[in-house]
Each structure stands twice: as C-alpha cells, then as structure tokens.
Image (cartoon, rainbow, N blue to C red; front, side, top):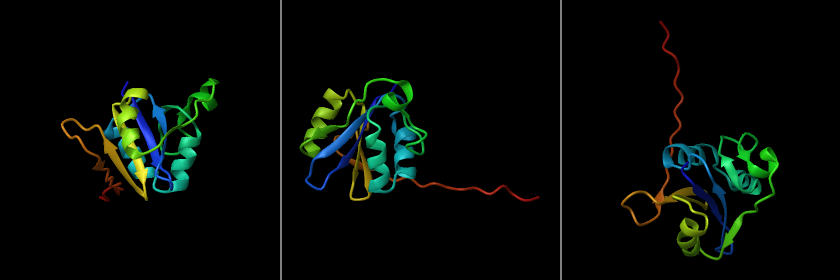
Length: 132
C-alpha cells in the first residue's frame, strides 16, 4: 500500500486532512484528486468521510472506513499551518505523499528527490473512437 494524506487549507491558514491507505501515489490518487475534486465543496465532502481506504472519482464511490466498513469514525486531523502539515503529515499520518487543496489548486509533497510542494496539474482527455 502507498499511504497518503489529503488536506485542504482553511481560511485561517490551518489544514484539515485525512489519511488515505491505498494507492496514494501521484499516478492514481493525485490524478483522481486533480481530475475530479476541483471545488472546495467536493474536497470538503471527501474530508467529511474521515479516514479512507480507497479514493475514487466521487465521495459516494470512495471506500471510507466508517461508512463502508463499519469501523469507528476517524475524523480529519487539523494542523495549525501548512508547514506543520508538511512536517507532521509524513510522521503522524505515515504518509508517503501529502496532497493539499488551496485556493482551487492541488499541490503534492513527497516526490522523490524534490523537497518542496509541487503543483499538481491533471489534464483529462476524452477520446472518440475513430470512425471507419
């Protein structure tokens, strides 16, 4: 499993975040976050689920421990600042990747060999079958 944390910067500068336990790498969780969770309301709905086993394209299809597995609700963590989230998220949440939604944009921390937050830009393409 590749653990990750999904966070959202709040108006007061704090960060609310939940732990994601499976497929937290950028090519999967990052692509889903950047491609489908584009508004603060969508991200809030995701965080409201508490700790996640798996992330999917909508909160309704995600697998949340409380809602879908009958486990105790594990509320989002609150970090006072982005720096605290960066420092504690990797330790306290045991996350290999940290995702942050801030002002309508996603960034990721934890990329190999890069010691800063990187913008997460996802482009969704739709393809039409060729007509013969």
